Length: 106
Image 1 (cartoon, rainbow, N blue to C red):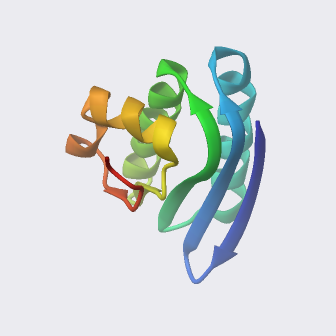
Image 2 (cartoon, one colour):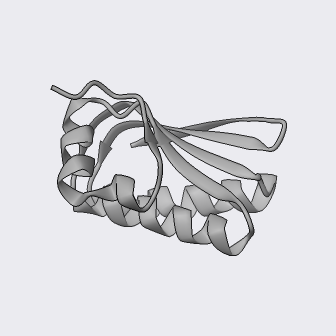
């Protein structure tokens, strides 16, 4: 999985690309924590538009990011999940805990 980020006006957009599984989740969370420490954003957006696969490790990564942001007084959300990650998010009911915006529901 490749992680890149854009920061502007208190908003950190973290772009996730490729596959998010138990092999990549640990390194991915370390990268996200480093970005959160570096920018200390008010809002952290996990952009999943280029994420082709996600399993339950992705849910853990999302919840850990949300918890970290909440403890720091910020907010986290998910944007533009591709079809397969969106199915995982819907099955987990993640939108009851964190906003999920965009993504095509079929």
